[in-house]
Amino acid sequence: MQITPNGQEPIVSPRIPAADDKLNILGLDRDELKAAIAEIGVAEKQVRMRTTQVWHWLYHRGVSSFDDMTNISKDVRAKLAEHFTITRPEIVEAQYSNDGTRKYLIRFADGNEAEAVYIPEEDRGTLCVSSQVGCTLNCKFCHTGTMRLVRNLTAAEIVAQMMIARDDLGEWENPTEGRRVTNIVMMGMGEPLYNFDNVKKALEIIMDEEGIQLSRRRITLSTSGVVPHMERCGKEIGVNLAVSLHAVRDDVRSEIMPINKKYGLEEVLKACANYPGAHNARRITFEYAMLKGVNDSDADARELVRLIRKYKLPAKVNLIPFNPWPGTDYECSDWGQIQRFSDLVYEGGISAPIRTPRGRDIMAACGQLKSASEKKSKAALAREAEAAAAATATTEPHHTSTGLT
Ligand code: SAH
Ligand code: SF4
Image (cartoon, rainbow, N blue to C red; front, side, top):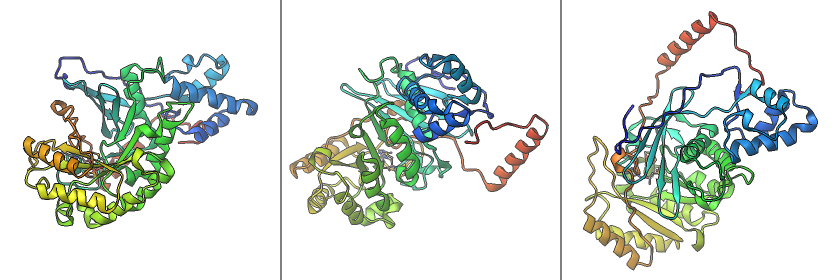
């Protein structure tokens, strides 16, 4: 474990032993919660009311113990505690940057790890959430892209990132006033549109009016341009869209983002033009990492303007100074050139702010996230399963109390 740069003690949540005979209800959606509550023998007439109450305590008040659910009768609380747990994944390391950014390394029940980052600003606080452990797409300039995809995160694991951040920031006491996490960006590790169903389910839980209540207008999903799912994202989830563009010519984009060979630049831009709900008040954000000598010329800036105009896109460009990571060959464009690029795009009538890098000192900035999790070979997984089977053969069999897993 590392000591944080500003000398603060990292927060480590207590290790909670795996309670494999109990169902962890954190991250269930309403229907699943209701089914689970019905199954443990709560009186049928009460199931709806108890579901509403437990939902409120779980997601609006953020409690982690059934004892805290004070408007629920003691015997029902005891029943809940007998069958269920409310278990957060473990924060193995929390690092605080000098600029206030906080990075959490989170370990899930199977030992895999992903990162989430909290970025406070003057008028808002943004949580950058991961959707996968690793990524299938190996964008050349991205640290996560050097990992293989280990697995998709479950909806529960995606919601848990929000729960953990709110725990750490102490904001459950007053769940809706003076929030510190005011916005979510699906811009952590992984490609959210390749984990569509879990991301959708997690965001629905987070947006629920009787739970965390984060408005869809405050949530942005970033994609590298998975064209077939972009429309679904607008229709079914309804959040803001950000698209990782990073180049204005197919040859350059294919070189730095291999997915471009599958879904080319103009195809991505067409999908943006068709994005449901994209109008001036809810512009699409184009992310553009400034890579020295690769995509940062004056001609690139002019071409960017031309393309956005051609497709009549209600767009804003976010210029991201390239964030370096160990082993990369890319360099960040010179500051003067980033400013010039920004000016040229502004002159074309499109807003192009330069994103101030945040949390670089703790490797928490865009594209710097990575965890040590590795995709295991089939042989290694089989060995582990055998060892687990041998271990359980010598102990009591496990009981599953609800049938849900
Ligand atoms: N996979 C999704 C979500 C990641 S969002 C996507 O690619 O859109 C993180 C953003 O940071 C993306 O725009 C990504 O392209 C960009 N990025 C990746 N590596 C970077 C780096 N080293 N410096 C700056 N931006 C980077
Ligand atoms: Fe994956 Fe996005 Fe990184 Fe590309 S930029 S490797 S899609 S996380």
